[in-house]
Length: 107
Image (cartoon, rainbow, N blue to C red; front, side):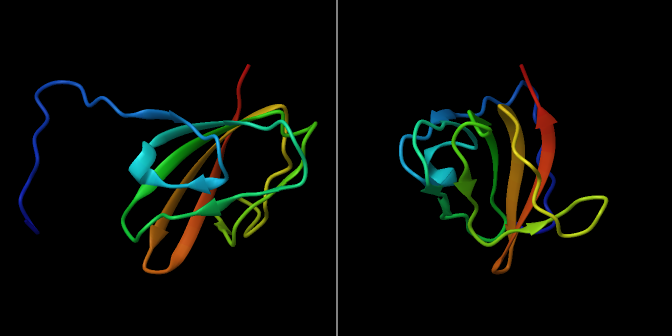
């Protein structure tokens, strides 16, 4: 209900999903991992307004990929990040606009 507070008394456990296709869909889990193994690959999304997904992408320097239409939130404006071997992103949607933020690389 709008305006009601939610209190968590224990940890929140997120579903981690290995993305085998190309669709970033929060129904599969709010944390998703995509290991790229072919090129070219065009990612799609099924994120609704108010939903978000953390996406971890591996092999981005070896296998280039194409994002869906994203408004990137960066210090330098709407600029897509340059992929490294292992990257983490957060995507969320407000109304019909998909936003993305590059969190950083991991090992």
